[in-house]
Amino acid sequence: MAQRDTTESDYYRDNQRRLILKNLQTLQGNVKKAIADGAVSLASDYELEYHLLVRRAWIWWRTGMTDQLFISQAHVLKQKKNDIDHLRWLDGAVQGVLTVIADQSPELYQAALPRKEPMRSGRSTQPVRVFISSIVDGYEDRRDAARDAISDLNQDENYNFQIVRAEDLPASGEKSPEETCLDAVRGCHVYLGIYGGKYGYVNPRLGISATEQEYDAARKGAKDILIFVERTEKCDERQDVFLRKVGDYQKGQFWKEVTDVHQLKYEVARALRTAMGPVKRTSTDQDERDRPRFACQSLGFSNFADGFEPVFKVSHWEGERIPNIAWRFRGPRFRTEWKQASCLSLDRTKFSSRFDLSKNPTADDLVKSDELGLEIRYYWRGQWRRELHRWHVTVKSSSGKSGCDVNDPIPETLYFDDEADEVG
Image (cartoon, rainbow, N blue to C red):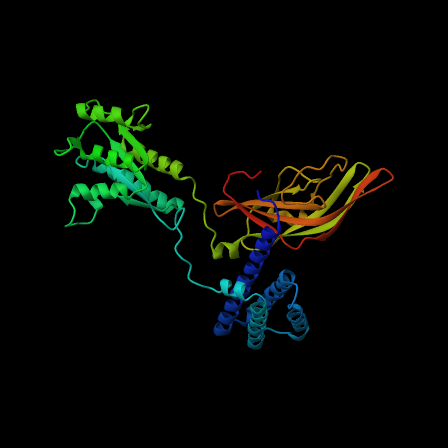
């Protein structure tokens, strides 16, 4: 994990600002819809959300937000009922905050404006072309199984493979079928060979099969080569020679033996997944709006002769509700194992631990020596999510005893997404 430096701090600050902007824009859209629908009963709820967002905006911009903050606080005393004027005031108030933000951070404001999202699929915007090579006659079911395996990876696991097969190539009047197929092999990133006991059609000009010719072209082009062999009782003599060439210990490669189309489909998917690596799911704007977030509040601390014990309260702040979380303390002087907590009983859960201050500090790449961190982890939408809350602490010694004071919280909460099943 990277060290927390100025660049990373700026990144998380800007990320928080973008999130506030998007929430303000979403709120304004909801208010306009409520005005159009005459849904005046929603005014109080929307006003409460507005106050929370304005306070968050003031925290993350620090300057220029004071007037808007005071206006919103004064309005609490003036507005006494839900009506259409209440909603119209909210519409203008949100626009006023957005105008202040636009003046201070024009580039960030423009970047946060709603826009059509580009299509996202696979590891990059460029597809990975996979050429499926085998004899055609009698092997239609094997070729379809390989095609289906690749299609499932695209649909279910966010890969971006493009399937290339001889039977799917467009008609061409300029090149022969031989040239068209070999060009397709050369233009692919992955060569996927499916071989059995039949050697297939032999090119009279070269004296080798079309399948072997495609394999040789892939070898010359330094492609990723994946071979699957279906062992049969009878094997053509020339096919046996070809298979020995493919599996040569010094110049060939390993292959995977399969017994039927079901195993072939499974092994094709597994091999491509291994060759390409896992695809990290790309978070969308909707993910950022729905992401569960938590608020942490210090309830005090106790100093003992043998240590220090802070106590915190954790509550769900915004986003989707989730059933449970894991949490731990972390920092050079403060580190615990992960513990579980039910989100249904957060208000009754004590987030505390006793620490021995006589132990030597250990390294922590995100929490400084004068800080205490409370880290929260949960599994949501296919990934492990984490957020880290931190406080300044003062370590003090008197009469041979050590103690700590928990001071102000650090405003920026750090958010992470992890691909691994477990987070260290």
